[in-house]
Image (cartoon, rainbow, N blue to C red; front, side, top):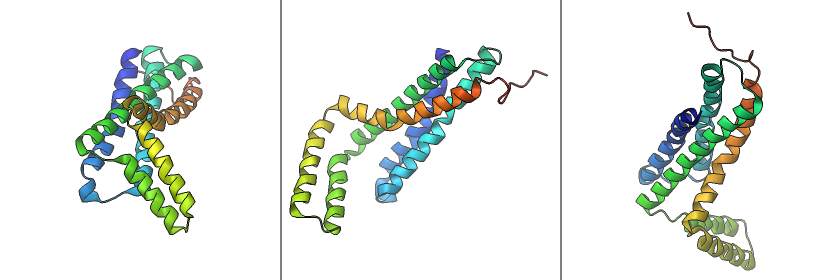
Length: 180
């Protein structure tokens, strides 16, 4: 089971991490992606987390002979999700280290610009600036930053694990093909 979790999790981590790392390394060429970048990131997470479904199905069909209970299936799914989410964390940390991208200042700078464009009061602008400084101090701690990054993806993996385990516990759902 551990090899299924690691194998499918690493594949999911590469599928989610490689495009993000590539995008960050080519940001000068691609230009600012803004909210489009977040949409692409979450879409990539969904594609990567198909490894959860495939891993549980592999475990059910190849290891357990076509029958799996909900909790073992959920455990495999959560394991794959955790490994894939660590791939996301590693890619983000590599991106920050290589590009020296100042995420906090860029993010809160955009929030301030948006607030100003919407006619926010000077007090509101000062509040956003203070929130940015507070968040920046917290985000400078690598353990907190990695936990925040992990939590961006893992809850999606939990939902996909629950759905996959619920579907695949039924041995009639996409049954294993008989060997010819």
